[in-house]
Length: 390
Image (cartoon, rainbow, N blue to C red; front, side, top):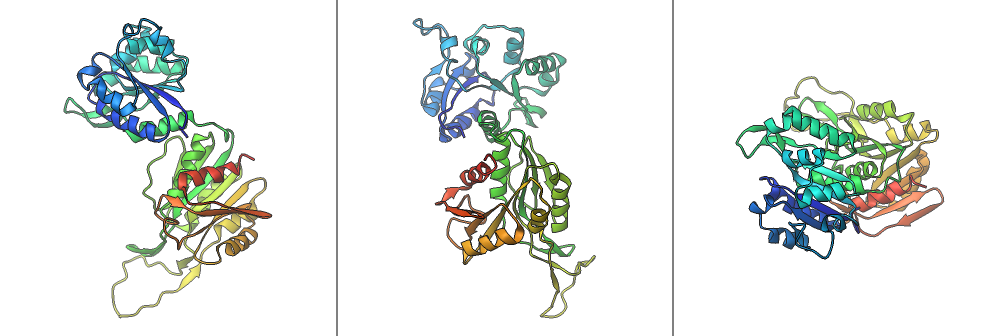
């Protein structure tokens, strides 16, 4: 998503400055180029050579050190995003007032690139009406703000103002810089396993981790879609800018999808509903009695088939996690469920299937199929979303 992009990071002073080193490393691993501007105060926290080493680029601290060019203009010319992190209350105030008294604030005023601030400040300073006015005013002018977290601050107090974590800022950057080719589409993405309860403390489920569903939801959001993200029991990171719905049982999953389905453009059924449910769920914990016990299971509602038959103009994409006859079973599922596409994978192979970050899939539609090599699930997610751009 970030390959070939150029990000200019303006570093003002604050203890959160150490997080920016990790952020730069993560951005470069995504294939983007990073340049850095540091204020004089920032250099008192970390030597510029550290940022030069991490960014693999020169760090700029003084607009007068390069007399042969107009640095504050030239440095912003080919930038895709100008990120200020950490962004202190002082820097935010200067920008809102139009003050250009150092290289960072001057470059912000000269920049035609979008500018985002990762705020980092003491709670009292953040909540001061003057700071809130400055933030609101800059947002009205089209500047972006990455909200701070609540936690322990440098002044040994607990409160709002702690700069967002590097992975949260990276998530914003990817969202901001991704081409919005799914803009205007509403996509329902169901992810993770469901459960069937035996009693209040026991249940049956499956090994689905929800990792593919998470990547689908994240990438669809980044590409501009309105995402309804319905999850079972998963431990994937929180996603901003999506509608999140938590479910446990098959019935809860079906009802959640149904409530969003009529005005949607697509349903991607990356969830793994249990195939069978306990016929009777005990209200009380079942005590151990004999060495062998028998429980009756009944077939669960077929959610993919239900929406395959209900669809009008929606695209339905299902998954087939198989251990044998993968393509044949997936083709049969495509027809039986009235789906538009089935994503088939062999979960018996190494590095594929559940709880790993890679997979080998075959995308099957009525008249064709296409096999793919081992890919990251984030790449597979984009291949699946490409089907909805057609």
